[in-house]
Image: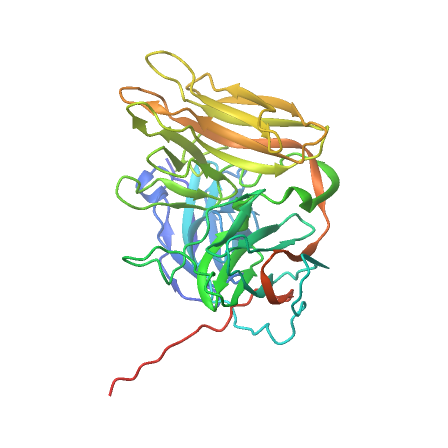
Length: 479
């Protein structure tokens, strides 16, 4: 029998690549998962190209082209048994993004490995012409229209005593934004109305150090938040890089939304778990996810529950390149907390929202009891909720409807498994293809701050791009 194959000839445009054309045998599992050639792309928004030459494919099966998170491909489809060019674009500002381009025609597949490297942000001084030149205002707000290249906020404030706090914020017309906080001993982000865990101070996060910020030293410190187009924010204090954060992982402020939008089929971020995720990468938690794009992990401790993003084929369409979320409780003598992943969504009051998901597992084998649930609860009143128990170890679609109360502004979509005890045998809770359908919200773009007793020397912003501050340096020459 004549064997189907796809031949990929890499013709790199403006970059370095390992050249290694390969004929893929569709029947060879080893070759089907191999990555014979690798493309390297340097810098957000940069591209690279390769050519495709296909033969002996079914004439009714076009070559479908896709890429893993952090990359875009064009075109998305090529005719079978023809030649074509595929362009790959890096759309992640992470320091390093690894993935692959997937070419599929029926059961014939070819993978091209792709590696993206983020560039350092350009340096720009923003202190010369501040938007706000200091004062006693408790609230400051300006209209906001960031460019396609991102934006930057900088402020210099002193928070010498407990209770002194400063809250910079920004929200664009698409509902992308944040609210941050600076206090006498902390610097971090809000997750809806609650303060998420603060950042660790890299200057004191060393052996014997506590990783704290000593903003109570009586001095004004300069803070900068640079936001890239992929909604990744770079945080600085006194010119020192503190942390890099995906803003998609955090809930917005309830008052950011100013009206109702259109009915949307899916209001969730990363609903199919094909987005970014990071693992602990340490003993006992090598592959345990410590963060999942768009989702908040609660309780955030792998000794309580462990979350994984894993490849799993569900059917011929949702195939081997698909990913799912899996939640497994850590077993203790008397259990610990209920582990879950959740997402906060802005909603309209008095509207009905429908939550659906593919799910399975969470069943205690001996007792036959159910430990996994999906539910919606209101952020303003957690007692208002509707839940569905997961009742099978096979993939099934679960659904629930929830009508928001007159005062509701945000809901929390939760997938949760109960705590586990020693000796218990429980199937893992697995989730995929989550969808929340309902009325969206609209946003009036704004940028500014709320001040609680902080001493503000200046506040400014630049909508032309994401910029880094000049880095402090100490140079030593030993004679």
